[in-house]
Length: 118
Image (cartoon, rainbow, N blue to C red; front, side, top):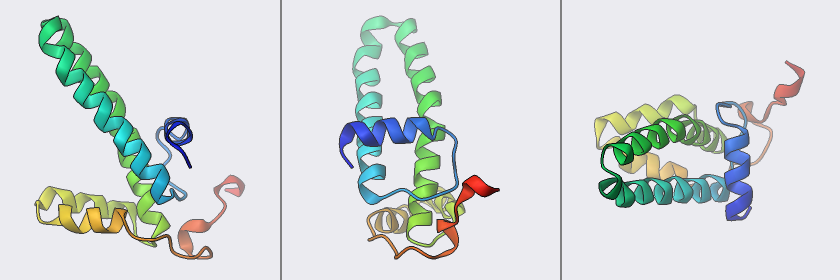
């Protein structure tokens, strides 16, 4: 999956926490959100209060898709999306990064269930 495909896939599945996401899909989308956030932080001081509002709106707009992509990424390695809450501990951030970088588990596990029939 390339950069553009990852962005369109993750934004298309804006709040879809079920299913799976490949490593490339997750990391390309994460790079996109990082670039957008840094871009907002760069232009924000030049726009004053409007820049702060834009940064807030963009931040709130990308928080749901990054967590849904993270949830799907964890499903791809056989973990529950709820494991993302380990980030709140600080130390858990290292484990989450390792899991996000882990190879895909073979298909056939619990998270590979076709959701279109439910």
